[in-house]
Length: 318
Image (cartoon, rainbow, N blue to C red; front, side):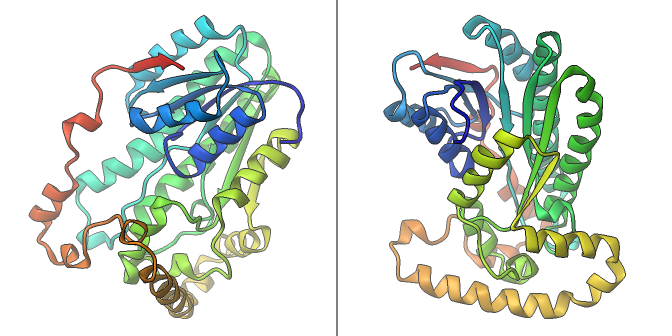
C-alpha cells in the first residue's frame, strides 16, 4: 500500500476471496479495520494478522438496510473518523434466462447491487459531515460489456457501475471520492461456480489471463487508494475491448461464438489442471446434472438456509 497514513477502513465480503486478502493486507499495513461479512467464523481468522484493538468484525446481511443503519451507528463508537469503505461482497449464479427463477433475480440484485448501494449510502452519511472520505465499489468488466450466460450478474454489475459513477458527482462537492473497480475474471471461490456451468460462462473465460486476487488487491491498495480514480479496469486492455463492445453491441454480439470457443478451451485447461489438485480445491457448486432439474427443483436448490440470514448484526472486537 503506497500510503503511509494510517486509515480507518471498512471492507465488506471480508470472509473470502478479494475481501479477505484486502482485509489481511490492510491489517498487515497497520490500518484500523472493520471487517464485514454474513459469515462470522472466517472473520475471526483475520485476528492472526491484527494487533490488539486493530480489528473489529460485524456479521451482517448486506441486503438488509436495517443492518447497515445499525452499522452506521456503531462506527462512531469505535472511530472518530471513517476514511475508506470498500464494498466487495458479491455473488454469481450463471444460467440462461429460460432456466432462471425469481430467486436468482433477487439473489444477484439484492447482494451485488443493493448491498453496494446500502454500503455507499452508509459511507456517505458518515463522510459528508466530516467533509471527506473515499468509497471504493467493486463492479466488473461484465458491468461494462454485457456477457451472455451470466446476464443477471452482468445486470447487477452494470447497476453498481452506473450508481457509482452517478454518486461520485453528487459527493464530489463534499470532498468524498468514489472509485469503481471493474476487474475481468478473478481466481476466487466464484470461479469454481462458473467452471461448473461451462456452456453458460464460456464467454466470460475468453480473456488471455485470469486475474489473481493479488492482481486486484495490488490495484485497489495501490493506484486506487492513492490516486482515487473515478474508474479503473483490470486489465486495461481487456477493459478497452469491453468499452468497445458496449459502444457497438451489435458488432460485439456477432463475436460471441468465437469468444465462447476460446473460453471453452480455457475452461477445459483449467478443469484439467484442477483435476490434479485435492478435491476441496476443485469445485464448490453441485454437479452439472442439477442444470437438468425442472424450475421447481431449481427453486428449491436456490433457497438459502435461514441460518445464513442473521436477524440482527452480530458484532465483536478482536
